Length: 260
Length: 318
Image (cartoon, rainbow over all chains, first blue to last red; front, side, top):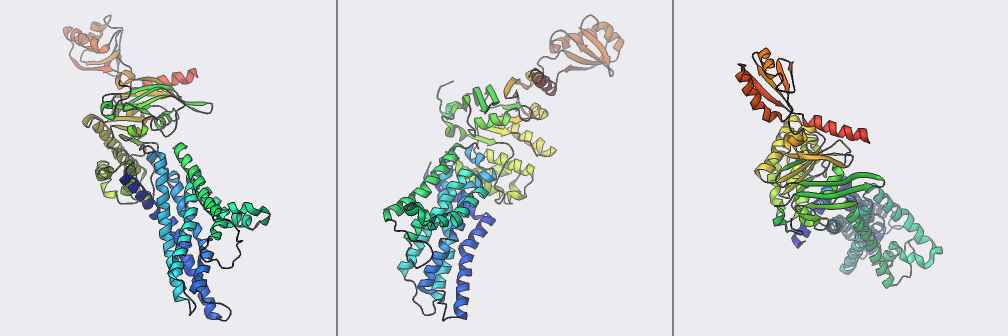
């Protein structure tokens, strides 16, 4: 397969995603609109009672915004886009026509990942821009984030949500169902994973959880409820590599072997 | 046939060849030891009831589902061994054509074109024009009728510039005018452009009007195959004769043919051998007896009669 074909296949996957109105609308709601609402709420709170509520922007507002939304709400956007990329062809019944072209199914699968990542990054960029703008305009005299902190924040957000996106592509390809994939991902992300992370009886086993690894490498940790595990960087890298790799491999295997 | 031909030499070989092709779903035998040879450049029909195994056979040809046993060669290339190479020049329409409804017809074709290869995009517009969708190409597929989606499916199959077209129930959803156009398109693809068309259908008239040859499949087994004439009954053994003086005609033919009877103002004559061979002799005999003949037609069983005969025999035996 030539580079031109690979590039065009990825471009086609992007076309499918960006022109799907429901997925894009929800991804933008989770990725960008949530950020607007979040900062608007804290700005109103600060305006009504500055003595007890700090500014919505500034360094703290920026970090709080990323922690609050990048790890809770933005993964939903990444999951929706990744799920659509993974399961969209099968759900639409188009997969058999793509498979009948003779193009290796692994290539069909692999084209989904960069496309989903690109669309996810686009959505999150809008939300991240809102966060940056809000952290400056709503600082109200408090220190504003430096360029290094903004870059680190962007990198962390892309890494965290990129991993969720790849997992969603893999799981979507594995199940072939949008509904099952989204239910599983949202259930894991919002219910199961936090419960396991708080379950101190699990001890060091919690280091295998993706959310724990992501919290461990937050660029500007500030106090919040999520337990901060003393995981080694090696373990963090391992966890952040294995989760998407294993699930993507399962998705690739299912794509290659399923009856089309 | 070369054991491992290149695609170029494969043009000369059978377009589709299966040997002992079998597919099991658990205990159920969906396709049972099918041997099939589809000559290049012809329109070949796979005729069978719904559930006879046509779609499963086609899905195996395209590598969409694995066979349980047997061999497949497409354009002379073994499948799945050289599947990618073979399918690069195969266009297919399997079952009801499906598309991304939120994309336009043109965008849906672009997706497949980009998967096929860098030159394929140039074939999108001609393919859309060819199936009569040029003016609706930029509408969302969600707004298309079933017939339009069927046409778009054919356009998608043409993107491969196919040497072989595999079409599963291709006229489903088409209106009568669309069916006529579609038949012309199929015949043109094969006879004017030298492509092979392998189509499955449960509509006997469609196969009879479009195909050069066909196989009749039932319960996963190919029961008969051959040209449409051969399948429809081979030799005619009866003919109808229209003439002015039926009494004289009866007298002239009695004893010369196996049976002669009057029916609806015509004489129906049954002969022992081939009616085509007997027709000239009968005409000469009538003319010699002073009977003016104004109608002489061979009576042949239709494919429908033959099909029902074959499949009901199998049904009774099962």
